[in-house]
Amino acid sequence: MDAPPYLASDFKSTITFWVFQTVTGITGVCLFIVMCIIFIFAHPKIRQKAYSYFWTTHSLYILLYVLCLLHGQAKLTGSPRFWMFFIGPAIIFTLDKVVSLQTKYMELDIQDTELLPSDVTRVKFTRPPNFKYLSGQWVRLSCTGFRASEYHSLTLTSAPHENYLSVHVKAQGPWTWKLRNYFDPSNFHDSMLPKVRLEGPFGGGNQDWYKFEIAVMVGGGIGVTPYASILNDLVFGTSTNRYSGVACKKVYFMWICPSHRHFEWFIDVLRDVERKDVTNVLEIHIFITQFFHKFDLRTTMLYICENHFQRVSNRSMFTGLKAINHFGRPDMSAFLKFVQQQHSYVSKVGVFSCGPSALTKSVSSACETVNNSRKLPYFIHHYENF
Image (tube, rainbow, N blue to C red; front, side, top):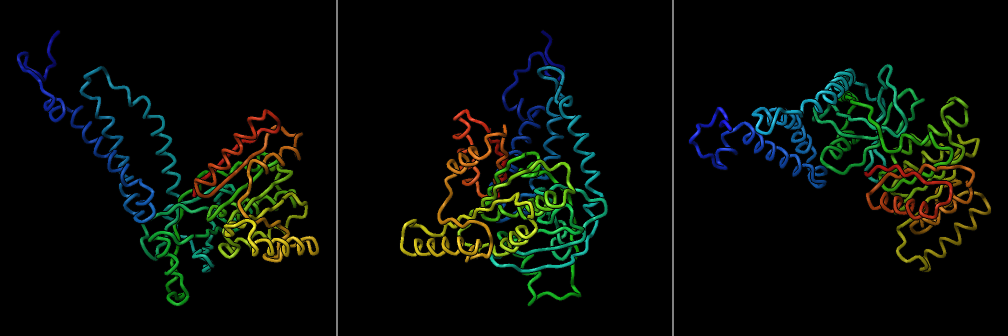
């Protein structure tokens, strides 16, 4: 066999030669370094504390694909074939980027901001012309008042039928705290009102709720934000007959929180949803988890008072909602079995959960347990971790 053209017939190649003196070796080393950088800065702690570093290093994906295309050009093991698998998705990705540019650099007016309890900031802004989205979807947002080039992923809390867009931002990292402090009334003046830039919308794990006749929705922590949009969209569609595509006949919504005080803004959302729900398609269950001892005296007395008030007035004495309050964490398997018994006439039930990974894992485990009984309906789980 003839030696490769770049090797003399009497040259004895070494590992150093293959790694540092060939296109394949050099690009392989560079690929390893780039992948290590992307992997390290994708750590959840870095994403939370230094999001800008995470986003900047992830922009190296362009270099990554260039190196992948160059990696096989030496043809050491045959003609390169990576481009065959790359070109189709690359064209689709490029078209998506071109379309997103229509709104990415469009500056939208902020109509209203509000500082809410639990370090949540509500931002209401102008909806771009012909902007279409589904409830449960999210966008990437930046504020021209500071770090205008830094975009963050936020769930839309406005419903698709509304003529404005809104997000509820939980202050957790540097950018979200900066946003909250920027709109603090003690620091903010109308004359310095910034604008927002928008990229999206993007698909969320909860956006297919309308395809199921029966649905179970579970929200925990800041994971309740998608349901502000979904529940509003649900009652609008079922109460006005404006949506022919909504299959939902019954929706069970479970809100798991340490205390009502943690998300008071969401209580207002639920109150508005209950008022609009004229067809009673929605059943709400609220689980208060701050009580560590299920049968201690305080919990028992609260439970007795709440239970009595609920029977007399058909409302919660804590929230004023018709929603049923429970103390402690939900038994998801038992709840899904209850739904299974109530709706045995359907073949499948959509289960949607959003919140910490521990919550979505417990819901997934409960679905698997109930499905193992081989009884209808079958529970199909969709989830999104916050």
